[in-house]
Length: 487
Image 1 (cartoon, one colour):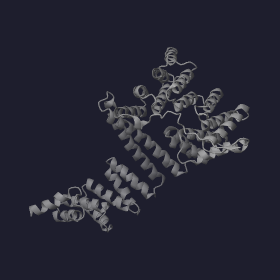
Image 2 (tube, rainbow, N blue to C red):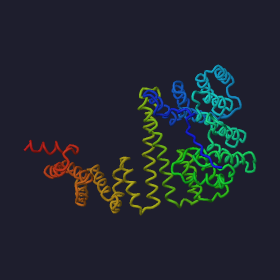
Image 3 (cartoon, helix red, strand yellow):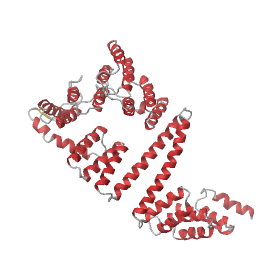
Image 4 (tube, helix red, strand yellow):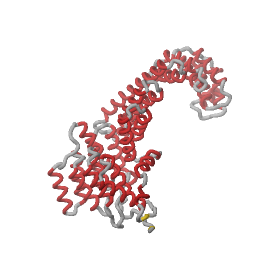
């Protein structure tokens, strides 16, 4: 028998997102995210708690606070998880729930979870409070289970409770979240493949998921609904371009297990590194890319470049986190320290880029693009004399020839070799038929060199060529027009 079932999710609360934050809350949220990047976890938690007091259904805020609490616990080398939580706090939260003060209970629970984010008791109470909210915060209730499992993902008891919770009927009579239940049962069966209750639960959840997604339910055909389910879920997750964090974690767990069984697999190990990079966990991604580089005995230049790129990205993200923080709170007491750290990071970035560029040239002296990159890094470091030789080689590469000649001319200028600079700029200009941005830049630089050489007529001719096509380019208008008034 076939029957059509519709689910529209009207029973769920529309959780608030960053778009719902007021301008003042957005500023606080930016500071919280920046504090997280700066590993100032207590401050990040404090800021988020302030937002949650007026916006209890801001789930992203609770997630950030929880992540900060876990990281803080790691730093303090304390155990994340306990069976109880902070006794006095949970009693207070429990009392508030019994009185019907859900908002007060949520505030009290955040204080507990800031110190003990994996507390089973506190997270269970959070789930209870979420479901008592009007309308119920279903996603927050589900997230409470995820938090419990954060530190012990193979806890079968909690996994079974989570799956059962997902299969509980809501106000419409439909399971709360059958698709998630399927994923949870998959995790249970990965631990205990022969557990009959999980097998049956997986079948029921797969059938309910098919119905909730708008499919036709075949009452006596559960086997058809779940045929090759595990393989289908895995392939579906692997094939999606945009993955949720949960899907990425599932793929990482699956591939990591495969690598343990086949430690020499370059493809699988590289895929794990890519997934961690997609997730934004650069530390783990780097570890895996280094492992892959070891498997190739350092022979894969693309992996070596990827490692270099990720290391530079870490420095850039650390710099931007401080920059964003100072933009949001320029008068914060920590501001002087962050400004100094930005200076140190800028110096570290320049040194890193230069070191990596040198290594690339050392590894492959015939790579002209590597010579060009090294020259740019040398110029940024103020080492113009050393850059000259690399730019002279790089101009033999057609893809960077004009850029190399422009930079080479600048190096000559820095060494007061104006005649060589003028010839280099002029040679490059002669190779560009159209008046594009590159040619205008070269003409301007050549004009400045002629000015330094006191060749006013030649300098004016350069500026006039630009003036004829782009009146607003730099200060060419004043240079050209002033020459007529002087005459």
